[in-house]
Structure formats: structure tokens, C-alpha cells
Image (cartoon, rainbow, N blue to C red; front, side, top):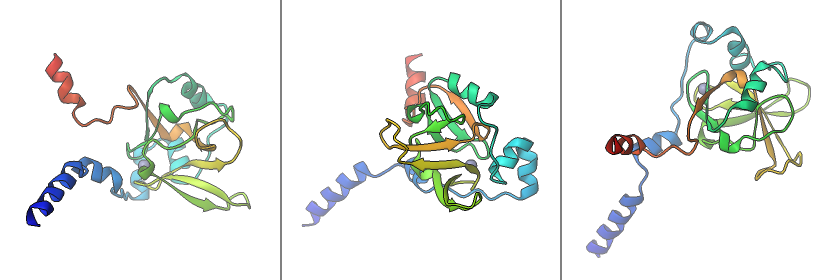
Length: 177
Ligand SMILES: [Zn+2]
């Protein structure tokens, strides 16, 4: 009986998530004073992330976004990965659109009534920064039929392989050199 148990334990250990994966699953909260946010962010980023603002539609940021290739989108407030080019789609709404987060645990939602009717606000789960809103059931031909309508101003684009989340990819590179 003991041996069966230890075999099971061994098997489950083999598939147990690494420390990195565990910390990904439970994002650590970042709490910063308002004055520190003002120092860290541009005025426009501060207005959006910390004051639930919205950038101008079809602006420069959106045009840049449309041109960007493969890569990840990090929170401009805390560098947490939120979206990637894999979930990006062209909704023609004037703001960067994704049908899903790339790291679901890093993106949270809450309902707001700022315009007098309920909308689902999208926030960074780590720094509580306002990112935009998510709309469901608009009929987009995407796997989720959701549109994460995100302010590009508060996303930091990191070009590269958007699937690059393997912990050993760096080591592999140094071995082949
Ligand atoms: Zn953040």
C-alpha cells in the first residue's frame, strides 16, 4: 500500500506545476501610492489606468497596434502579461481588440455603471489598473465571441514569439550557440 502511494505521489509530483507556474496562477498584488503612479506613468496612462479613462478611438496608438506582428502585450503599469498577438483580431472599433486574454489569471473584470448602464470593466489583476471593457455576443467570428476593447496606451508591446512561455527556452538558446 505504501509503495502504491509513493508511486502515486511521484506521478503527481512529476506533473506538479513549477514555482513559476504557481506564481503565474496567483498573481501577486502590486499596491502603489497614487503619487507614485503619477511619477511612473505618462499623464495619459495615468488617466486611463488609475482613473478609468478612455483613449481617443482610431488614434495613433490604434494605428500602431494594427501594424504590430507577433508578440505579447504587457500592462504598462506593472509589466504583467495580459494579452498576446494570438488573441488579437480586427474589430474595426478603433481600439485594440482581443477575443481572450493570453494569461487569464492576470486579467479580471468588474461591472461599472459609468455611462448609466452596466458595462464589464477589464482590469489588470496585479495592479488593478483599468484596461478597457469586454463585450460579449456581438457576432464576431472568433473562438469566444468576446471583444476585449482595450486602451492601447496602457499596453506595452513586446515583439517576439507569443507562445514563448517555456521556462528553458533561454538555456536552449545558449546551448545552440
Ligand atoms: Zn498591471
